[in-house]
Image (tube, rainbow, N blue to C red; front, side, top):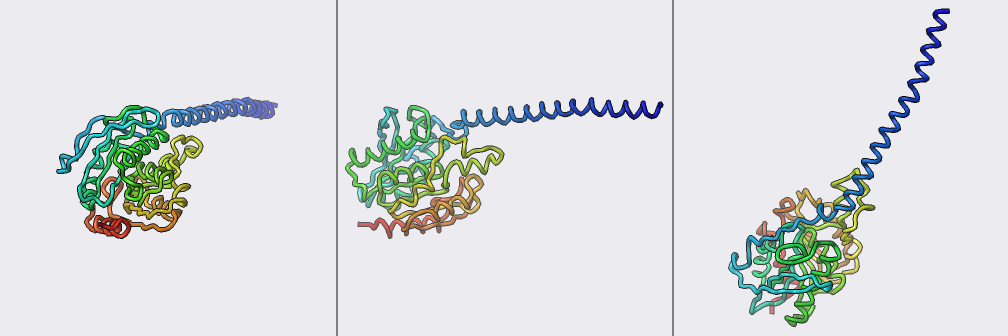
Amino acid sequence: MSAMGTAQSSRTGTVQRTPRLRRLLLVALLTLATGYVAMCVGVCHCQERLIYFPDARHFLTPAAVRLDYEEVRLAAEDGVPLLAWFIPRDDARGTILVCGGNGGNMTEVVETAKTLHGFGFQIMLFDYRGYGGSGGQPSEAGLYRDAEAAWRYLLIERGIPAQQLVIFGRSLGGGVAIELAHRHPPAALIVESTFTSLAAVGQREYPFLPVYLLTRNRYESIRKVPHLRCPKLFLHGRDDEIIPLALGQALFAAAAKPKEFIETPGRHNNSGLEYNHETTRQVGAWLDRHIPRP
């Protein structure tokens, strides 16, 4: 009788513990799900802070690298005021519009401007909205408008025909440059250390989040490059830790001909045309083939 009572008590205790464990497990799962949803909402709401890193200060001007320049005030289509620098050249064979990356401001590409100027081109640099001397807040649509304003200035105010305009984009600026080239066919397009889409970069950084569903700032370059008929040059560092080489190669593979790909030494912030003498020579030779000197 005592043994039977003990067995019955044990079964009763097990039955009592089972619903309790189920409730605890359900609470834990609901807590995790709530936290995950909250994280997704936070990323979706604050994604601009994870993408754009503007600096209001100009720590360098073209004068610091012995280039004469003119300060230009522009206005985007939606009225946002923009600051730009135009670097002239009397014997120019063309003009290159430079779209910088997501950090700092146009001072980050002053050294690039010097290299491109040395190839025989006039150069146009500009601050995206929210960067440097420009107003507003950055967004994908906004950056497209800013590049459009710089393009319009070169065509209308400077009287430079599209057949003499080259668009250059670095990193995030590659997405801006490709969109601009998609809207307005240039003489040539050069992109450096850029991606197939920003969502693809984000998915690699946050594999546990549905980045493709959350991203508003998409920069879907891979959908645009098949439609670009101008000569295209793609540069990418083999050890790029932010935008992996594989993404640059995939973008190149999707692009229409004519096109060329140069794999350069270096990581994201020390690869490209001005960090390696051989790469600089290759870019200069490519420009000579597609934008001949007068």
